[in-house]
Image 1 (cartoon, rainbow, N blue to C red):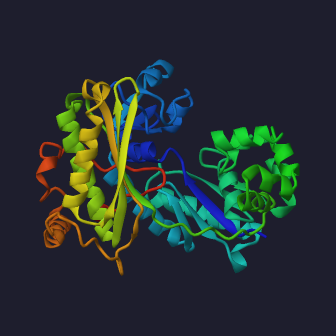
Image 2: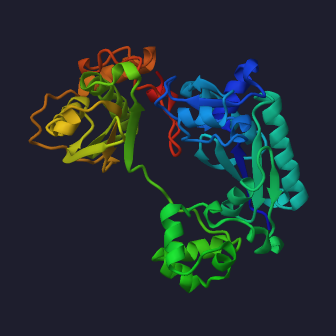
Image 3: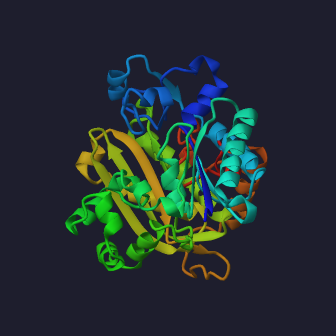
Length: 409
């Protein structure tokens, strides 16, 4: 029985750029955070991938692999807008069960849509409507299978613009030719654990007992994996927001600590606004600085539960100053800064500290949020971010789709 249809957009960011800029069509394109030799590709077009350029390929290597490559500065707001339009189009064919990332979503097949012919018809209709309504450059690979795990696996088996169906009768031989890391959940560390337990190939993985996989994974996740690769309908595990994070690669002209702190202040203010919008409070704060040469420095602290921008900014500033006590940091050139608000809990019913000596800025935060939501972010901001309006722009992480309401530039 077919229960899941998985939609995976091909070279999404680059395809959107090619759709909006016809002069880029048919050419190798890499989308980068900024036009600079020290950055890397966050997306590569189908044409660029044929030369070996892929996500995280640095600019110098991309030029070496493909001298004709065209670098395009990313436009996150545009990609989110296209994503929202794509969701509406897919929803016009069937309800979306889950959006896994900005370029991946899946549909739970039910009733008359479960037979192979009906599922294939739906997949082709989705492709047609996306091309017709979003544009010819926006293509997707679709996988159909007994569960979303195998449907995702199937969507990766034929790219670009593929359609692969895996039925129960096709298992396990339909998976035998795949590499171990072709399966979701098997990254570098998990691959090493599999090897350490004597599993070095997909046939060995598929032939392993449930007890063996429980031992390898160290618990119930091994059993869940055993069930998923056999096409069983395994319930999705509920996830909760545990942290809010932002990071930014610094442009060459702002690679000094004063500018880095201003940009970090802006990132922090965006994170605090997201915190309040989600009705959360944070109990831990962490920052990170990456220096020229790749050296990373981190600092963190636990705090009383808060959602106040002033309190969070003060903590971030203290953490940055603590890192500057290290001579290598103080004399280094910052290339990237990032921050994380962790230990999130719902604000409802939360008792805030009676000993918080910071000014009560709750009303001020509310006014700032309201003005920024009404007139656009950066209408009003705390002074520490002055001079960073062109930096710390919206970014799209693999597991987070920005909210245009709270994160647009």
